[in-house]
Length: 227
Image (cartoon, rainbow, N blue to C red):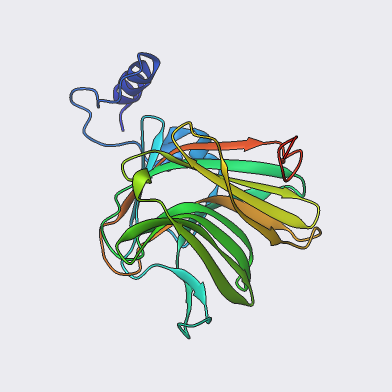
């Protein structure tokens, strides 16, 4: 991208515009952005990942997935995750939009310790319905879900908080209150990475648009005061 186009892109961002400047047809890549998305490193790079304005658009590879053994009998370790270090006490929030059309389309947040110890949480299509849930893997995977058809076409935020020997996962649509999704064990001495992820086990062309990646303090308590 030429220097002139970069300046035009910068001016559009200052003005709050998402359109490409006239004559600048190349979308900025992650390496050119110098934005929040630069903080991570890809585990299983996607087909395509571009920064548009302040968002990251990721196109997943067909047959990408993350699962270990339970019920299905296979090991898949090809989900696309953009990962950065997660401290022993801290939290991350990932916001995204997803085109829910096919079985197992999925996006959200991914915590990685090793090939056999990881967590993914977010929204996934199962049996024709978007489901909010989490897969917690310690050698083998387990999966918990709840239907959220009312979340279609809304921005989703998933929050993962690590403190002590536990990870607490919450999620919401729009500016609704967070709902508790999962509390899972994690070795407090484990070195972990975390970040946005998406996967497309059954089709090509799935695109997830990530709009926010925030690092913040861990939850003060599992249950809000008064609960």
